[in-house]
Image (cartoon, rainbow, N blue to C red; front, side, top):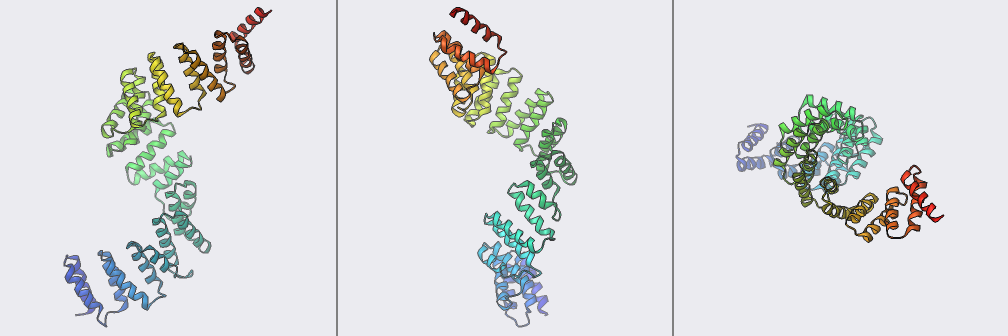
Length: 418
């Protein structure tokens, strides 16, 4: 029988699951003198395609010893080495391919791919940039460089190279446009991508960009389509609910968030939005429960604390509001407005010294804050420190001259002095 046919027969045995028989037959065939090197190469690629990587490498390694300058052999063996985890051996081989060889670009791209696997994106990008100096018209190099920048979230550079490259998926172009702020262009590309294939990620991108463009109804359409396709896409519930809120559809926003919580019970942002919507619906007790639960999931959630402070003001629960302000100040001590609010509450509870400390701390952060100046002045006046109070009021008037109440106060105190 012809050796080519015998080789094909042995490969068929592998396909049929007769692995031991097939490999034994191929081993004998490789020992025969009539087995040409071209057929050996074809056999190696066939073994690779059937999953016999080590056997393929063994054949190619022998061929490489005989033909050390054969670039196609070098690159193919390097590919197999890389897949086998022998990355250093692969890179060493690829360096043997000369600049003017037909397989040079293939070698560069594989070398860059290996660097990416090793977690060295800048090394990979540099290899392609060096190749572009010699092959500035090669679109495949620009495309590869764009992919590297895209994976590194350097979207402006990715887009620049994609435009010079071969064929970039529309969804990736849309992502780039979205991240650099060209939202109209991004939405156009997302919509074109959706005509080719609807996927959850593309629907999410389209919905998110539509939301940023304040096209609320389009955002609802895309995000609802996404959730119909994949109800476990938790972040989509958040943005869909936000779109409904912009459309003043509180009931639908609430239903959206509650459905999302059935699929993801540990998402603090969903619970936060749940609390915010309940607050708008004046369901204060349920709103507080939702917002408190956010803090059990994420103790430093600033938005939840801020919402609880507003809730406490609405319900008149000053003691709880004071505790929430204290907690928020531990996380954001640089906010003079919080020191002011804390001071006012301490005054409500007649804790004058703590109120004074709060106002003074706020003024250390914002010396020209009129509210802090005035409130501290009132407190000092009541404590008998009129001279300092007057000084603070005068400073406040210099900053904001149209405070008629303060002007009247100062005039009265001036008259008393006279």
